[in-house]
Amino acid sequence: MKNTKSVLLIFEDSKELAISEAYLLQHGFKVFKSDSLKEGLEIVEKNFPNIVVLNTYDSEIEIEHFSKKIKAEKLKKVSLLRLLELENYLKSSLVREHIVVKPVHPSMLLNLIKNRMIHENVTGLPSFR
View (cartoon, rainbow, N blue to C red):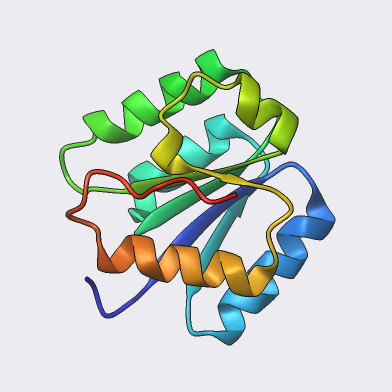
C-alpha cells in the first residue's frame, strides 16, 4: 500500500459527493472527484488513485466498459467499489464483490476503502448489505 492514500469519487449527487469528500479528507486521503465516467477515466489515467468509488446511475454496460478500461491500464492497479441502491443491486449482473448497497454512512465507506486498500492483492471482497 502506498503512503499517500488517494481515492477517486465519481458521484452524480453533489451533496453525497461533498459529504464523502469531506470525511475522506479529514482522514488523510487525497480525493479526486468527478461526476461522470468519462472524466473519471481521464483522472484515473493521469493520477492513478488507489481506489475508485462509483455512485452513478450509468448502465451496467457503461460501468463494465469503464472497469475494463481501468483493468487494461498497465501502469497501476486501481480497485473499484460501486455503491448501488438495493433494488439495482438485486438486478445487477456485475461482479458482486465490488458492490456495496446504499445508503452508506461516510464512516462505513472509509472502512470499506481502507479494507480494500489493505487487501489490494485479494481478487475480491464479499458484498456488504
